Image 1 (cartoon, rainbow, N blue to C red):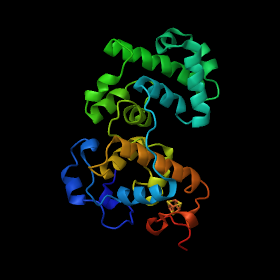
Image 2: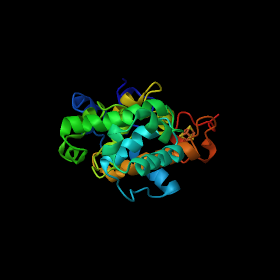
Image 3: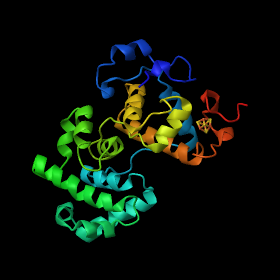
Length: 257
Ligand code: SF4
């Protein structure tokens, strides 16, 4: 993984590289960029375009975990109804643990890899009960972010994005950034993360750039600003660079030539 100082990045000398280097052995959540982080300018310009994206209602972390597992590689418009069907059918997550996998699969049909996720969901719930004695993740509030991320990622179906959304979007309100395919795409085009970054390395690269004074709500907002931008302007096939407020700093700006 390239350090930020070696990335193609045209926001100018914005990251405190020597300091980052000195902190390279610390967990990513403790390695934060200084007041010149490029994320500050990006957030300011995307805020001007899309407006504030503050959390309205934070779900229970178990709800968020299951919703996140279902939403992996699946659009929200498909995964959230599947989550609602699951809750409507079984009424409680305890009941899901003992439900037949084939029945769960039928209930969540439509989400990507629904048969695999029909095993992940009760598997994750069962693991939580087996390891903690109850279906409650609020104990993670007292854990360091990197330890909580690592523990969640041992659950079936939980990668870095599922773990980060569980920690940041829920009542846990932990200071981690959810890095999904949308953030990876915009981050790669802007040179924030290497072109070959995946969810694991991309998460660490982004977290190194997070300004020290951003709290959990700021990270929530940055995720949604970047996601909106990815969906509405920096699209996969034809990015609309001509109307992008970041184009003067983007190495992939298609209007440059
Ligand atoms: S200039 Fe184009 S490629 Fe760069 S972030 Fe904006 S839309 Fe994406």
